[in-house]
Image 1 (cartoon, rainbow, N blue to C red):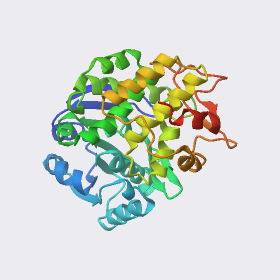
Image 2: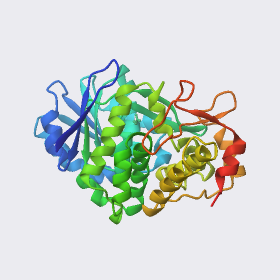
Image 3: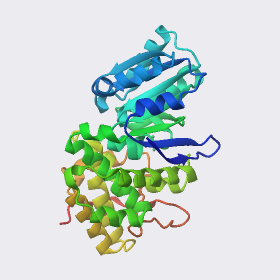
Length: 358
Ligand code: GLY
């Protein structure tokens, strides 16, 4: 694995992000002597696919290893699953000098990180990210948490990992639709932060929805830079919410049958259209964004009417005083703050008008 970048959280220690194959060797190499126990947390699918070499590498270092699994899927990202994992750790006498290893995609990493944030008032954790979405997004930034019936990620904590290992080799095992979920976040990072990356994505064939390790690395570096500047999400980090105000409402309105990346792709298309109609983004840029998403096999049309999604907009965390706030690019590659804020107020009327425009 190669060292790609360090994330430098405000008020915390920098941590490295590695990309490449064979995360077992890297995990053993970075393991700290004081971590006498390891708790690998993954879903049933990723744990069976990826845990064995990691366990062997740690046992070869005389680490006591426990592997905890939970059923795959967003429905497992709950307080109940977290409590089950914690109870299993207490039963196994996991102590404060243990390190949790979150293995898998976004659900596994968000849960593992949240368990680490609160177990005995906080223990160390590292991530082995095995999906494209997890590598370019969920593994980087320290937000951990679980969903509740009232919304996604409503309960959680900031808790930064000690290291992130992005297993590029694991992406070969993902189906095309899962890869596309990660591509949506890569397009988002390019649209709000990295104009050159946006152009590179436009020039890439999109073959089998598997971007090169270099493109994945560029996207990870963009996220790392943003969260290093604003770790606690009080300012510029909000640019990463582009597409998410509408995207989260679409996920809820479809009872999560629309996967996160696809919902964000539709969300970005609609939010960019709102920005273009308001004169905050050039029409041509909104069209280029939709064209890139479509070429990468991502949806751009909402699967439900605005009236079916609007009630879920209200419960979005980014609303204030009944108004929806959206993080909107002002060019393809940047967000210009308006009135000191990286989000803008968007009326339901403006969203409804942009909803199903061809
Ligand atoms: N854990 C993902 C983030 O902090 O954005």
